[in-house]
Image 1 (spheres, helix red, strand yellow):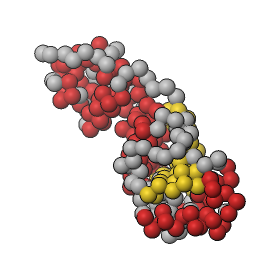
Image 2 (cartoon, rainbow, N blue to C red; image 1 turned 90 degrees about the vertical axis):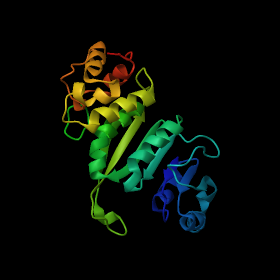
Image 3 (cartoon, helix red, strand yellow; image 1 turned 30 degrees about the vertical axis):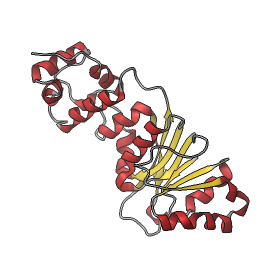
Image 4 (cartoon, helix red, strand yellow; image 1 turned 180 degrees about the vertical axis):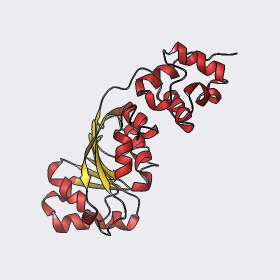
Length: 231
C-alpha cells in the first residue's frame, strides 16, 4: 500500500496489519523521522513492513521497492486532486485507491456527466478508473477538528479510453474554463477559432451547442483525437 501524508501515523497503524508493505510518503521531515519510532512502539510486530520516504508527493518521480498496488490515504486537502492524479499517472501499478478528501472534492471526483458537481476533476479521475463515493467521515475523528466535512472516494483502475491523455486533458481544461458557454465558443481558442471548434466537434459526433458538463471522458478523448482544422 502507498500512503501519502501519514502525519502522526494513525492511519499507518491501521494499514500495517492489512498489507505486506506500507510505503509512506511524508513531506515533513520531523514527522517522517518520528513515524518509524511510533510504529515500533505501538505495532512492533509489523514495524518491518513500513518504509518511509521523505518527499513531496507532487514532486515524486520514482518510489523505492516493489510498485504499490493500492493507494490508501488521508490526502492533504489543499492538493488532494493534483496528488491523486499525479500518482495515478506515475504508478500504473495502482489498481485501486481509497482516499479521504474534503466532502465537496469527493462529490466532484465521483460526479458523472450531467450532474451539477461534474467538472475537470471528475473527467480526469475517470480517465484512470471508475470512481465512487465510499462514505462520509465526521469532523470529530480529526485532531485538530477541521471546519469542513470529509468524504471517502474509491477508485478502481480500468483501461483509459483510446487516445492521448495530455491532449484529452487539454480539451477538458478548455471546455470547463468557460463551462457556461457552448463547446463551440468555449473551445474556440483551443481549436484556433469557433468555426474550427465546430468542425472538430462535428467530426467527433458531438453537438457544438452542447456544454462540457454533458461530455464523458470518452467523448473528450474522441474530440482530442480529431484532426486539426484550419480555416
